[in-house]
Structure formats: C-alpha cells, structure tokens
Length: 391
Image 1 (cartoon, rainbow, N blue to C red):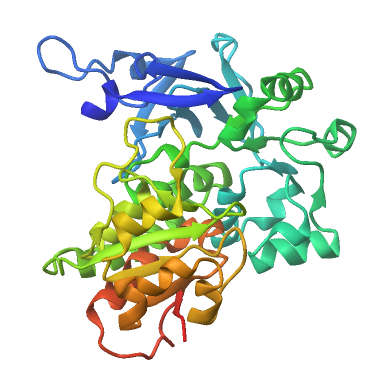
Image 2 (spheres, rainbow, N blue to C red):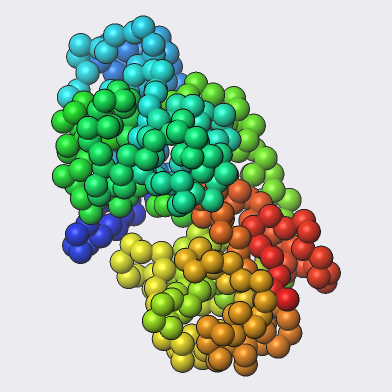
C-alpha cells in the first residue's frame, strides 16, 4: 500500500507539483477495519462490476471489467476512461469526468513513443493512423516503414499537432506522453474536438517490468488480453531466470557525454539503475538525485563523474542521444579522462543499441543482457540484443 500514498512529482512549465495519489488511485483504499473499500466497483452508471485485470508490477493504471464488455481504465492521478464495446451505448448515468473510448479504437494519434512497441507486439499497428514522431525519429522498423509507406501519417509533435488532419481522419484516441503536461492547452483542445486523451504514465513505474506491463492496458483497447498475458510472461520469465542468482557485487556506470562535455547519468532510483541491480550488479552511484525533481537523469561535470565512477567495474554508454559507438577510441574522443577508468583499462566497456528506449517490450531481455555482461568471461556478444562490447 505504500505506493498509494507516495507523492508523484511532475514538472509542469517549470513548476514542480506534488500530488498524493488518493481519489484517482487505481487500487482500492483500505477501510478502517482493514478490508478493501471497493464498494464503488459494485456498480458503475448502472453497469455491474465483474472483475479486475491482474497486474504483477504496474502501479500506475488499473482496469475494471463490467458486464456487457465494458471496461473502466484508471490512470493514477490522471483520469478515468470507459471503454465502450462496439454497438453498445454509453451509460446515461456516466460521470462527466469519465472520458469515453469507443471500440473498435481506430486512427489513434500516437505521441508516446514507448507505446508503439506494444502495438507492434500485439499486431495492432493498423489501429494507429497518426504519429507524433516522423519516420526518421523511429528505431522500430515497423513504425518507420508505416510512416514511409503512408499507412501512418505524421501529424505533428506533442506541442504542435495538426488538428485539421487529426480531426479529418476521425481520430478515436490520442495517446500522449507526460510531455503534454508542458502544453496543457493542446490536451484541452483535442478534448474539445471530442478526442479522448490518455496520458501514458509508464515512465512513472518504479519497477522495469511495471513499464512493460503497460502492454496489458493497450491489449484491453484492442481486445487482445490473452496475447498480452503470453507476451508479458516471456519478459517476466527472463527476469526470474536471473534474479535468484547471487549478486556479483560488480559496479556499473551508465551514462553518456552531452554536447557541453558533462556526463549525463541515471539517478539512483531510476529504472535503468534498478535493472542493473536485478541483473546482479550494483549501480555505481548511491543515493544520487533521488530527492530532486521528477527527471530520471542528471548532469555531472566530468571531474565529479571521474571521482565517483572511475573505479566502476563496467561502463555502459547510452547511445540514445549521439549515436552508437563501436570502439573504445570513439569513447575516449569524448573525454580523455575516461582513459583512466578501471573498466576502460580492463576492456569492460559496452554500448547500448539505439532501439533500447523505444522498446519497453524488451526490458526483461535487457536485464538478461546485463546479467550476461556481468557473468560471462567470453568476448562473444552475438547473443546480446540491446548492448554490444566496444572494441
């Protein structure tokens, strides 16, 4: 229950907001006698409650099913959506604060890039008609090809959507990232056009597989819950195959060098840091930036980074921003200080593939990759999916 009472921190137009998850929390609140106060689930606008979606790791959404095929989707601290089956009517008594999503959900305007991988995995790409990222911004091949062949249309980024195009294509749902909080007027305008706006909160999940479990939410929209259960189990099993192994005690630094020469690192409570721990390693930074704003990364001057990370057993360079590296020399060209790092001297330098952050369906595989890095004495990286060793 501690997740219910934690404060969610967001930065909206430079102002940090802290909101206690209570009334919109996706979980039933405990009554004073210790029983779950879920009487609200007994009926919704005349609909009889049936059951709820089982979740293992995700805490930022829930789904309650009602008789007749209706489903209530709740996003923590961000609203509720009633999924109305094809051919069924919207209940007359439905609360005006609950948005309506009608099935089949077609011509989705997908802005949250992390959600694309879920639709691809569920064979639901044909439900997406509009994208907030153009072809050259995708590392997911199916998405890139769809933008190039015209089956998905670029409709403007989150802050400047092409409203005329979105409305003309009868958009049934907009799926936004939390960046939309910086431009709330865009969300309001889309809703004024009658388009429900669901804000993707998977980035707020503390556990890596909590992010992957958002697959189940999109499966509800598509009516493919069984497929989602199978696909999610594959990633969960990858974690279970390594999490019981003894921790190696080996330390890992995960970073990239930004355009001004500073090291951009993950905070100690970030999901990447958590993956390193789950894989049997130890993130090199203890208690780094945990009480700062909601951003998952922070910049460190190279001298400070050197002092804290030079003795890390392994280096993983994040290729997302400035591209993949293939050699240690390419890494050293970014900062000569790295030459004195223990991992560089011992040849334990790795780089992520650029598709990592657009593929939340692979987080179990990434944990497996890190575990292999930490436990294998071989230089062979053919079996790696999201990392490669620098030569």
